[in-house]
Image (cartoon, chains in turn purple, orange):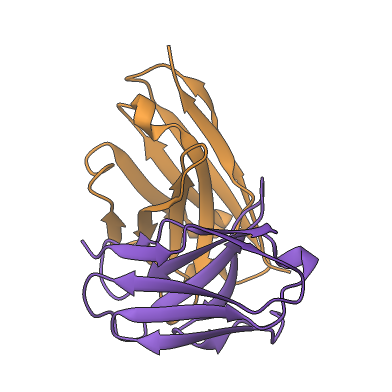
Length: 107
Length: 119
């Protein structure tokens, strides 16, 4: 199985900060990577697919990059509604696997 | 508007069975592969199973293979997850999700239903 490793596991930041989350795959997944946002008690929400494509309706403050085994999710200017947990997911090969999550907290 | 509504969760004893349902609306259900993803309390997301649009192709995580069965009724716009031989480690929130039509990222999620396996 492909292991997805996210770092950091927790990130403390302030409104207006630029934040970057890293996701590493244990083997190449080309660009078959998605990012999801999850708020407490809610379902995950798709943000980014194919590593860098922004889902319709998602603010342009979110961006994704990378290919192969290393990927990043960036938020250019953190807003109050962006405090949440973020997950990466590879869909290159079965079984589909998620990273362990990165919780973005208010500093 | 695309909507997915899960139901069927509850408390079940170890070794018991439960069938989850997911009612879909707002899109042509048979055109889309569907999936179940679960999340144990306080933990991350785990892909469980998926099924093709016509229902002929399925995949399972090793952790549920042989115990869970995914199915769908396209004329009813419903997705199912039959869960047998349940274990404590199956305790989780279960989400159904719709894949993109031509790829395997989860573009719409339901709100989830909770399964608790305990004596």
